Length: 170
Image 1 (cartoon, rainbow, N blue to C red):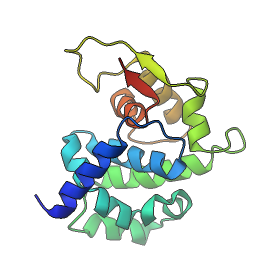
Image 2 (cartoon, rainbow, N blue to C red):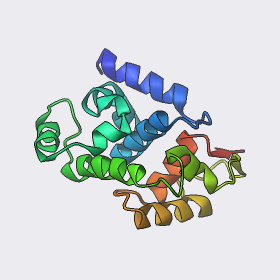
Image 3 (cartoon, one colour):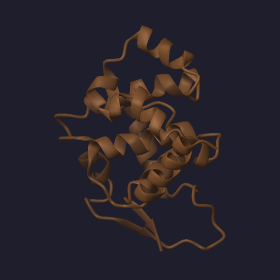
């Protein structure tokens, strides 16, 4: 494992579960959640330094403006997880975030409105997997899909909400 991968894993562990209202950080967590689907969280988190570099330091409006040549370049990057559906989903998701106003002032306001801006504490048996979707994860996933988000199912959304500290297991 490279030092960059270890750095990405440490950064993700530091961020995971910390309640955040920072759009750029929420987008970063969304990127990891999308790429994590079908992989281990360590693989996706280990790519954080690469994701940061190729996805314009998680500046949502810049990623939303990616065109086909930029997307093709990402798919050819040997450092990337080169799943075309996931790469295209990140660009689509950035565009969906940009469409949230005027209904929601930003991505954070949108995500947190499902819990009325409060942390949602969920009591869970110790043997229940972390990524098992809750009713909240399922509700948010359905709404995100209606708004044009891609590669967002209940499990991926559950991980995003846990990572963002919106859901906390007790």
